[in-house]
Length: 72
Image (cartoon, rainbow, N blue to C red):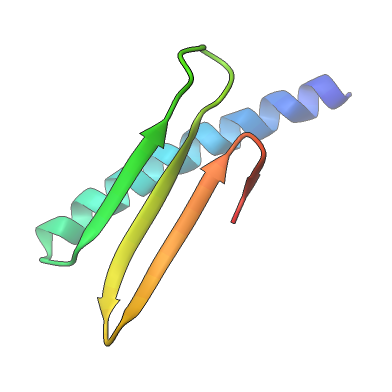
């Protein structure tokens, strides 16, 4: 059961990382400062994640950290 949940979570992380990359590109095209950096330790299934940051003006930032260990 835990193995299946871990596989599902890894799938969610992979999808979220792809979505954050797409969001960063879309925001950049609109002139908004946004970046998304991927983290990968070289293994196919472990260590995937990303750091997403977007500047929303008036000194406001949005930041997502996504990894196999959690989402914040």
